[in-house]
Image 1 (tube, helix red, strand yellow):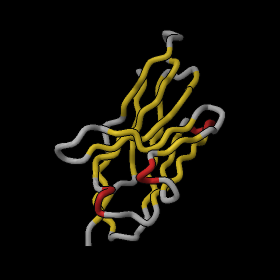
Image 2 (tube, helix red, strand yellow):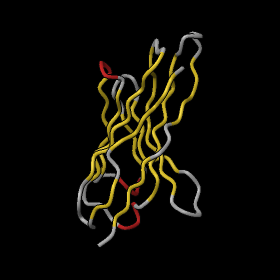
Image 3 (cartoon, helix red, strand yellow):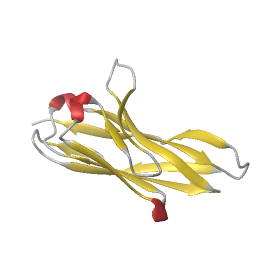
Image 4 (tube, rainbow, N blue to C red):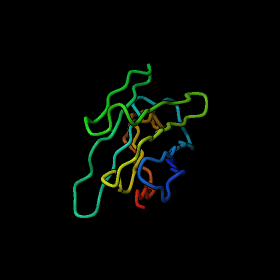
Length: 120
């Protein structure tokens, strides 16, 4: 069984910073792309940033220049460094990954989500 566990969310003032972490554990035989999504109340879940196994990255226009996605393949962990946070960044942030598990097939997994609130 594979699990993704996020951490690092919380309450921060506008202009502040937070770093989210997401660790994958279980019967893992390889991880392809890893990504962060977010969902604000009453809105759809949107892609924030994605990083391939080779380290290529892509970002939503709304976070370019403020957020940085990175990964540590040895730890099966993906990070999201968020800077200059704005109230509109308030959402539940979800980790997502394409993982080759014990079945040797690649499956898509989600974390449970971590709340980020940007408010003064």
